Length: 128
Image (cartoon, rainbow, N blue to C red; front, side, top):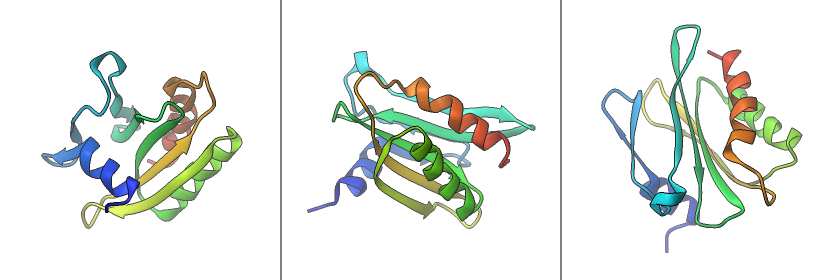
């Protein structure tokens, strides 16, 4: 039996091309479509950030490209400041130069993906 994180990571996103673009396989119904920010422009760089509502209404998947372990920890701290529970977190290498943080977080009722987008965008601005 596969772990929930493994199942989520295998069924939601498939990396294609040079790694700067992602093809998304929908996990939710079309009226609950996913939200992807795969090209946040900061200092001329593409900053991949993916925010996904999961089937559980109180859970989200957050994927962020990290240059180092420090950004992984800073992201976890950002969740803590927002009073969000981290159910699962992992840092995974996709290539020699790319590491991705994967978090499954528990969110309160009424929490929106946009509520997490701004703090993470600000965090990423200073990292890339």
